[in-house]
Length: 177
Image (cartoon, rainbow, N blue to C red; front, side, top):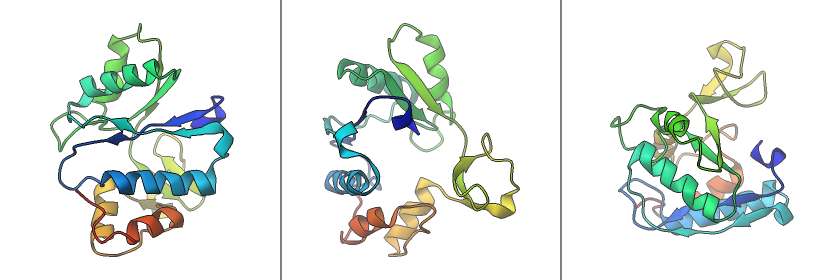
């Protein structure tokens, strides 16, 4: 979706100290490499690690991340539900809403709002904002659900996780910090 809006895409994962339960740095990089190899035109993608640590500061950290990406030449920044949050400390959409207070950032936020699911009728990743079909046609998921499945050695449905990414994760004895 985002690649259709821009000339290229910088995939810029944070590599550094994280909390227990997050994915290990090397696993994150291998998973992105698998996605790029199998699903993106490589001439339009740059994978570059951002060497810092997560601070789990929610909305303020989302602004900080956007400024860093602007300094790398990005024109847009994808900010999602609970960006850089921890537990229920921040409202789920606080990191999206804070961008309304900082209109002079010179980088455009692309807000990813709501909970996501795979819709069997639409045939893709959707949210309640984009899908008109009833929940009986949805395959819900969350990061917590996916991490729990992986910890148990179970493969998430292909509608939820690309098989190539699961292959990367399943080769790791423990993909988590």
